[in-house]
Length: 220
Image (cartoon, rainbow, N blue to C red):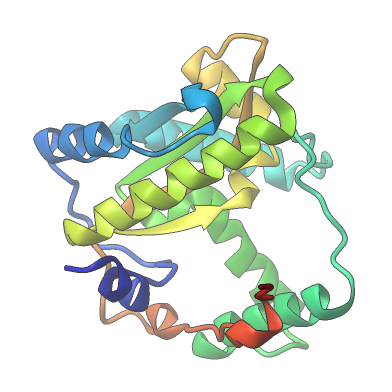
């Protein structure tokens, strides 16, 4: 399948079948993703893939942290306050998501429960945490974004769906304890993945893209 076809097919998947990806296929995919480009070829990503009982235990720990009322304490600046057109797009995305599952704007509890699904990994059989040494800051973040996109498209080619989640970087402490991460390592974001439940209404969510003329300028 061409890259264009993969981009057109892919969407953020928020409901999965209870069918793990085989270890052999996981290793193939992550080995292929190592071809992702990075600044000066530093390859800063350190990826942690969590499955099975470890994933269930971590999910429980994350939900406790989120529901405790303690504010997020991300390792990196993951709490931007969107403004202008960016805020409009954020609202548009949220509206598309909640409309697909019948949650109205006034249904605050319904929205909160939908948000909590992030830390339940949308019941995906696997979750990946993208980490890097903290000192790398913005340059490392750029490389991790390139790597994650590469990984996502390779997964899609193998019939595996995914959802990028900034939320998985907001409460890093339970993850660090569970995975025994060193102090100098920071969690930037995460990605739930597995085989999509095509019948789930939430997987009907689609978002628009800005027209190219509003995003790209050409100069001769």
